[in-house]
Length: 486
Ligand code: AMP
Ligand code: MG
Image 1 (cartoon, rainbow, N blue to C red):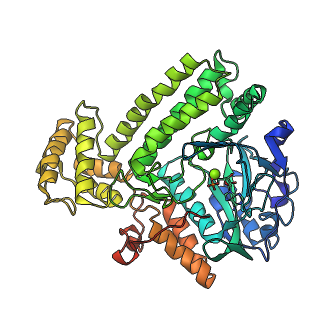
Image 2: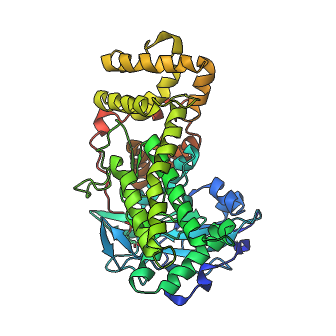
């Protein structure tokens, strides 16, 4: 276990040509202090959790002191935002401090969000506000707990620095870690400026670092695209099955290794609704919950276009069109597990569709209803299960479901255990995050964030004393509008 000054850096991105990034230094915050520290993320980079007590750690984690061995830079990228190409994006407020190798030969980007203006900041201030970094910090942990690929956060440094959004808020920095921060949009900028040599160089870089098994294969670029399609399909299947709406699926927010990246106005479903739009500036619902898989497919088309010089059109079409089949296969697989089904049956897609239709109509809580379904007695064909059990359509569905369970010899007690390992008891409901944010902002009390972090890292385990945290949003907090400014 290492001190912050002893980390083992290998800054591969900084060895790429200058057009890939801009050397940037973080702009320190006024009166920085460490307010959250995630020991689980620290373990990934071999950082001693005792370092949380190092009075200088806040300075290292907010750019006040440069971490020895690091090479801070802002990454260049572009992307399609709400369907329109923007040639002018890049890390405007985040800085890749460096890449740390751990003792298991894993490599992690340390990416500091809210680090001040960079060359790519355009008219913006380079900052992130406390409430938005708290949401990102917590959501990374619950996603990881749910088994959904994600970036994670090591720390939050708070400050007295004033940041203007709808109101005056306080600036904060989040140190985010991931195996890479390369995005679909990292390829697009080079393609649309005719630098196909750089598209190739970046593809080679990503293959070397994140897909090394493809390095010496034939058709390695097509295989690379194919793996990105596969990872993206898996990610989307997980989002849809767990009721996660990202909110801003622009191509610059799409991780090349299939991580959930760039948490903004995200939300977990309360009631099941394909129309759910977590981002209040998304007036036409481009990024509504139900649209997410189609948008991922479109984003992959944009990636394939950017890789056009490496993968011929006909081949990339075939690969990208594979998304639908892969997504369907993964989604069905996860939903079968969530329903406690072990064997495959041709009727499963209809069974799942019928189930979701009932949830949508009855406005049952998505997370809690699925959790409660683990108590369904196979023999009873529609006995009391949950809040919607009296609903006629549910009884009909339950009869089919019950027969299906009996047909595969399902054992109630065993099924319940299996279902509880895939249907969470807790998710990061917006009101829970909001309560923690309120305490932090109003009282300088960060204990609720820590409580949520510890709770949500094991979202499938019943945790005594935390029943309240599994409740749907109380009526008084229903109309909560999450600001999309961050
Ligand atoms: P996001 O919506 O956070 O994914 O950001 C989209 C783009 O805008 C990225 O290039 C960000 O770096 C940039 N950006 C967002 N907010 C700021 C800010 N306050 N200062 C500088 N750049 C920003
Ligand atoms: Mg972004």
